[in-house]
Image (tube, rainbow, N blue to C red; front, side, top):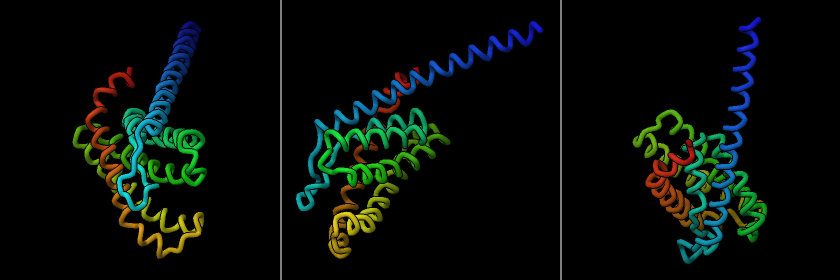
Length: 195
């Protein structure tokens, strides 16, 4: 009888500790979303002059860092929340289509990179994860633009194909630049995120 009571006490302590850890994790994820929104508000500029709507911003960096710290599912959650908040506030001109495209772009990156890094949490694993994420995001956005731009913008498919080199180059440069910064910052920031 005494053993059951002590086991129940341990179980209650574990439940309380898990709730506290989840609350702390959610608070840190909320902080990463806020940083992401602030970054897109402060820093955004076109990479190519021809399609000026393709703007670089560093907003994915906190999402990539959160993915490495908390895993691919948390990274995807960060992506969705950040995309919606950005799409309703600082990037409102893109509307719901902008939200969808951000989820497809960053979501594909974090799922691939997050799964790879989860299995190999080393510098080499990080490089492989970030490289695979960059390639995945670039490919995803090429396909997404070919399929969705004619539907939502009424663009002829030929016009999308003409923009394809810019779309591919933009996504590769953006994801690559954000990956490099993530690689340089992650270990320093991860100490705080794992406290």
